[in-house]
Amino acid sequence: AKMEVGKQIVLENVFYEKDSFVLKPESYVELNKVVEFLLKNPKTKIEVSGHTDNTGTKEYNMKLSELRAKSVFNYLLSKNIPAAQLSFKGYGDIQPFADNNTEEGKLKNRRTEIKVTATM
Image 1 (cartoon, rainbow, N blue to C red):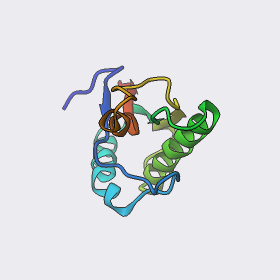
Image 2: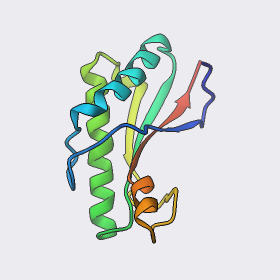
Image 3: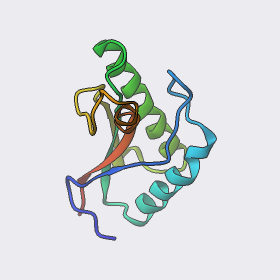
């Protein structure tokens, strides 16, 4: 599949331990699809982004989201994806995807995304 620059994909099946940036093993299936995609498209660069709901302080959420994005970044590196293809950033709760006033919305907002930043 051709991926254009700026395209964002929510990784639906990436999970972390609660209030932690430790990846749960059930995340690996989805992450391995990202690995496969990057290996097939060595000129494609992605940013891994972490997002939280609005529970807790802005500072805490920013840090947690960054550490979570970094966990995914480190996982991809461990699968031989060159660092030049990857970057990561935490956005905390500043880019909500859904309504933070509902539990369902909060769940949607706690997410990991990848964004294509360059293709050749």
